[in-house]
Image (tube, rainbow over all chains, first blue to last red; front, side, top):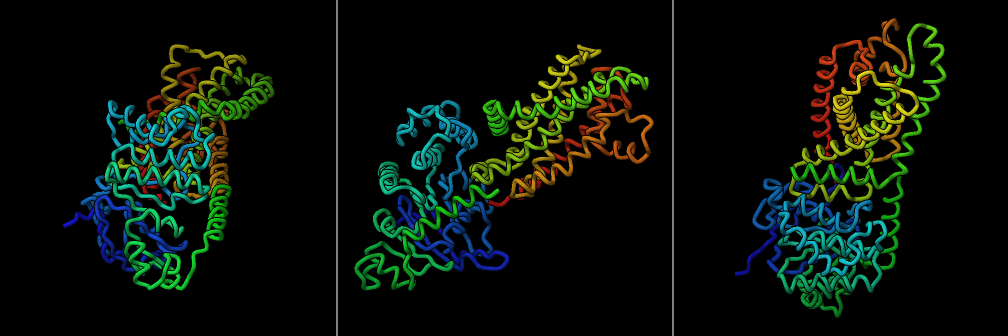
Length: 265
Length: 248
């Protein structure tokens, strides 16, 4: 029997005037790379927020690394690392200081701190830039630093919410090779959301297609293709949801959205 | 303890990395000190009040602490907009500790700002009567700073936009400053002003500073510090409650 590290059953989240997530259930195995694939507004981020204790579900039950995110917030928080959709680094601190801040908040002992930070920053190839202010970093470097930061406290699960949004293809590939490497060498469970088809198909062991707050289908990319009698994941997605995710449009709209968030004063 | 320390350290580091902010926020207190201090000095002396600069300096020191403290609450909104707030809110530590660390950090920088104004005042002719009380005065300055930083954090926790924060804060701190007895003595003022001053927290801070540094005061030092401390605890309570409600 395989061990499930994340279990969600009949998970629902209602906001004032709409239901973001409707009665979804899924299990994620230990050591698995699992993807939520769906368009913007499908409920991906809301689900991640519930899994990571930032939002309480309206109904349904959740187990993350053996604990309930609502009842045992801090235990769950120790068990995962997260890379948010938008950067969450402090621009006015150096790369090292950002890592150190995280290590202290997560109670990493002083003795471990230095070696762990050095190890991770070398892993994402930022050690030689450790004393630079984060504001001087490119988008790709910031992402790498965030991944490294998410791993400082030895989490069992890594959550990535649209981790490659706004990154160029080369940086994207680079980033995924780190993640796959981590998954292989440390057996880390990875949960990511994306609206890039090829990313889900190439990286994830299993995919759940989510739209309008419900899971439409789950399985490996091959299984999804077989189920629908199509030849590519893209066609399978189209058949299942009746929609295409247009990468170009979506990504430029997302960039606009990020820019608007940044400059809204 | 570590959590509070690292959040404190972050605020202090950010302060020292922004010399423009340090120097820029000295402009206003300096203007008040020089323009009013020298401008009204002669009239004040003629009216029998003595040396106006001696009276004014503690008020202007408190003003710089008030402004820096309340405005340091804006960091919460910046952090929210730039995403860093998420990093702290998803960490396995209590929101109270996060709020306390931030507040103590903001208060420390505001106290430093107050110290710079004190030094400037001395350069421009302010002469403390009781030099040996200055260490105690620094403690009082820090208490004032904690009080108003907690207020700023509380307001910032409720708001999402910088403009709204600036509007509300200006609306709030101008009367706090002008009616605190910072610029004029609260003896022989109309009853309305004297009443407002009695519910203005800053007036107790300024009174405490005056009694420590120049030896004149309305209330006893014990009353002043007592009022300030009670308010510190109330505002820390309200601030951390509002901060704990922040949703990302």
